[in-house]
Image (cartoon, rainbow, N blue to C red; front, top):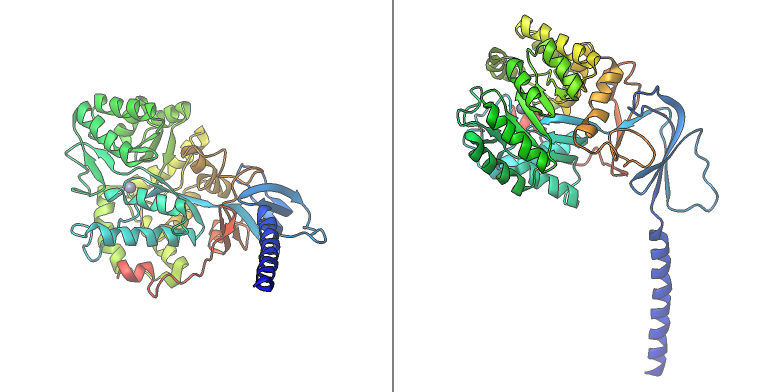
Length: 445
Ligand SMILES: [Zn+2]
């Protein structure tokens, strides 16, 4: 017995030493080093070449010229030689409806229960992360699916992008004539009902407020903005033309779509610091939306032919009513020139592919590549109130990053040459098996 006891004590002592060793190693956070790369930090500065970026835990701790020299005996370091590739902040898609389907080929949306919609929504978000989108702003979602996925990703239940959620869109009872009975809306008339609707959203845990502006009366708009701002929540308005002007005057923080807004509205937005999310790839006119479902369904998209799809969609988008399309391009360029901060948002799914396409469309509309990149990174973090942590590559910021093989300032479509994605300082497995079928095959065929 005594020998056994001594043996036990010895074993326990050894185990104690080993565990101490393990804890000693775990105590220092993992250092992730990206070396031999170029950095486009998206602050607007020119790219830095021949750079090393050091990430400690989830934080960018060093950005310096030259290759990384590992000190002998240095532990807990993971070095990635990027062989001249380009490092950028993670991309954002700022106008997202996770569970929406356009075209709704199988006529699912009208009668689909919440659970399959929620599953599709999560798949859509996780696919977007593996296309480089580390941030999504959800501007209207049914049954608070956006909040459920946000919390699941934040808690690490699944690896997904950061989500900023609006919950349901606050809309007068007449609703959106283009999409009647859309389950993403919460109907309210008059200041009292508006307050109730907003409180329901706030109780669910929204990050900002989305309103459907065109039919809102001045007192309704004022009630929403006052209550939202009192809760520290920004307000964004689906609006264009005259309704966008009213919304800007009333004090919204952002305009979605902004179709046919006047030069006067652009000037006012610049003065008041109102953001513009022009959603170039879609939602330009009633006529355009009516035609889109039929025509996209006939195009036979395939996940394997991303670039081809992009070209088809670009060509298609150019067929919108010329007057509206031309003015929209003019609005984007004028707004950027006046100092309005532009945001990149697709309003269409799958939001990874369409998110890239929107950034390309911003360049086709007349923005520089740098302006388009900033619209998909820095400005998004500012709109979501997290610019001190995300949106650019700077010391002490969180390492949400992408690595692309070639320079997107030479050709914006180089964003498609994605090599790596880092979320919260950790590399994302881009090729993880997500099931046999692509999103297109599952829901658009
Ligand atoms: Zn939308």
